[in-house]
Amino acid sequence: MKEKLAQIRDKAIQKLNEAADLKTLEDLRVQFLGKKGELTGILKGMGALSKEERPVIGQLANEVRADIEGKLEAMKTALAAKAQEAKLKAETIDVTMPGKVTELGHKHPMTQVIDNIKNIFIGMGYEIAEGPEVETAYYNFEALNIPKDHPARDEQDTFYINGMGDFLLRTQTSPMQVRVMENKKPPIRIIAPGRVYRADEVDATHSPIFHQLEGLVIDKGITMGDLKGALAEFAKGLFGEDTKVRFRPHHFPFTEPSAEMDASCFACGGKGCRVCKDSGWIEVLGCGMVHPKVLEMCGIDPKVYSGFAFGMGLERVAMQKYAISDLRLLFENDTRFLKQF
Picture (cartoon, rainbow, N blue to C red):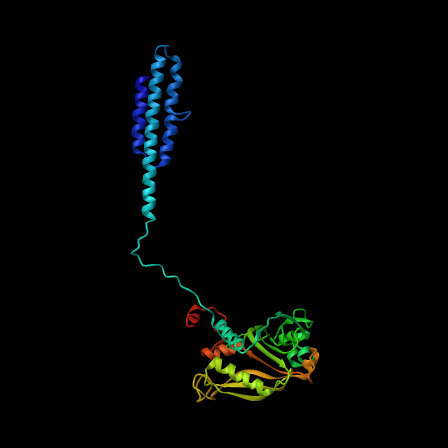
């Protein structure tokens, strides 16, 4: 039995010295010292020994166990240190290596244009107004002096939510004029940017979803001269200080008189080029004096107050400002296109 114990010790020490990781050490501990291990199996045979031999073999077995356990702890400490060293080496930062460049995004060209226009009007004392994109027919049409038989209410142009009923996706930001006038007493000076929806086919100049910006000023003594002055300042802020504007007669149901405003081409300075189609002018927006009937429907006395309103398609402005030829580029998220801005 002494020889078997010595063999177990030598065998265990040899295998422990060869162990390459902590899992192997644990397997060896179970193999030699576990409940069904080799040393335990030897000790089970001590019952057959004489009284004189038992103390001697028992002491030797304890020495063998102590040697194996000591070797186990020593190897565990060494392997743990080795594993920690390898981990630290793998995590070492080479400060001489170039850093990883994080590519930052930037504002979409449409957002840039909207923010630019907002800042121009905020600087002129205007407030920002917001409203629902799901609108009622009353606010989208009737309150803006557009009767039920008006062509603009044709189902081909409007996304109705319940057939030809009362709810629709707003076709313009003009309903915000009415909502503001109903809830705020003059003086009023607001702009209302937002998404609008029309049943258009997608092509280079049309989209069923696009952006508009509406403006409204109501106060005593507001004239067409105030309208022209405010929009001339806006055009200079957007296209440059040398920009000139002109107004052409037009018709809108909710303004009287109405006009369309052109700005001198920012690309050629009015000489004529590809951007302005050799005319020297770029159409920017529609505008006019708020129709007295619209004021009355909103509870504002047109004999005391007057005002002007204007509205523009923001995609059109972005395309003009950045010389973009296809509206679809503003919606397709092609990074090759967006990186130019």
